[in-house]
Image 1 (cartoon, one colour):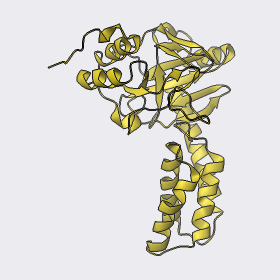
Image 2 (tube, one colour; image 1 turned 180 degrees about the horizontal axis):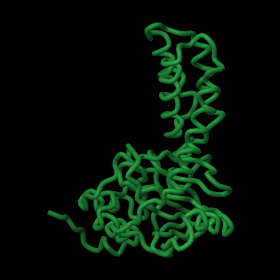
Image 3 (cartoon, helix red, strand yellow; image 1 turned 120 degrees about the horizontal axis):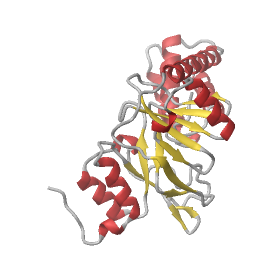
Image 4 (tube, one colour; image 1 turned 45 degrees about the vertical axis):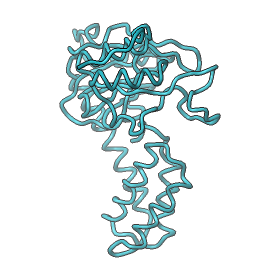
Length: 273
């Protein structure tokens, strides 16, 4: 049974969240602006009004209307997160200039029906949404001023007002009918990710004395902490435990070097490799 609360659907964010879930698109709540600042109250917030309120972030995404109503009763102005990757099968291409938009259209090929692609107008450009049967990673700069959001990522669904008072809106609405990602874009994302992955492995390979499988495993652990924007100081203890009790154990200073490399090389959030 769907539980409704009197007057709750006057909330625009709730209406929008219900619009998505009724079309089979899971969502989760994000922080929002309050008096010009992020509602998380962190003065140094790296993603104001764009990071998860729910405990497990994208893993909490759901199409359960009761849960949606519970969240937005608690946080009526919460922004809306829409997962990309395997949870929804969606891939978002973030485009940050008119020239970049033209380049993406050209890559899709002559005669491609670009107007059928869901397109969100953002503060800096557009996010175009496609379906993908393959799990694709989030990648920075697949083209000049073009990024992709895939496995482990999310987009911020309209309506939203960001920290620069830019209002997002759909130029072409996201529905249950989403076209498949063009082969040209899929190949571009995959090859770009492969290249970055190789560079990452080569950088970690510069740390001597750690067996490759252990080095890769430790990198993945640190990577996940960085992805969730966990402060570097909090990560030291959990990564040093497997170095001490691993089989075989390996030196503490080499584990800390991997920690340093990851936190220097990659930004927090879902924009990794």
